Image (cartoon, rainbow, N blue to C red; front, side, top):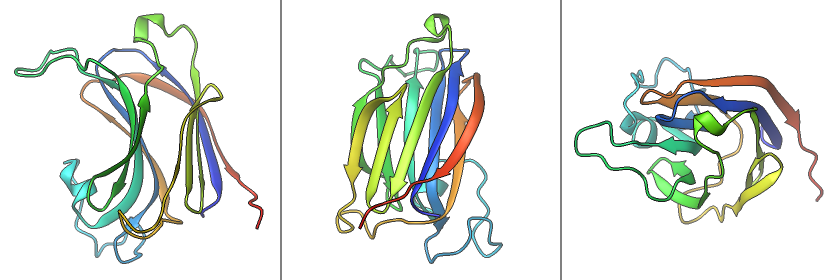
Length: 170
């Protein structure tokens, strides 16, 4: 449902790749994310931002150490929030997570999604609070599935997943 807080512990073990969190994910016409009428997703990122689904997705721990031909190190590491369908960058903040060899303990990540509000925090430090106007990137996304995605060689530990209802005041 909408109006939830999702939190988990995250500890990187390698310094390559990307971690992402997805929320309010469902078909563009309101279908359940696993509805057989949706085109099967096979992992290609374009299927997630220009395919059959809508979602909010937050990327964090974005690392590229130049190990791929033609790629350079990211000069300023960021946590990005995108709204699909359409790959709209709607919010961005600096990524406070250290490289893996400095991550001695897990970091607590929390996402709060309540109506048009989206908050992203690490260890109770608010990185951003975005309010969806429901116009620039399409209607406000409400209910749907949550999910995690790791890419390009990232190895990380995840623990203590919690999904809690958020009571909103009217």
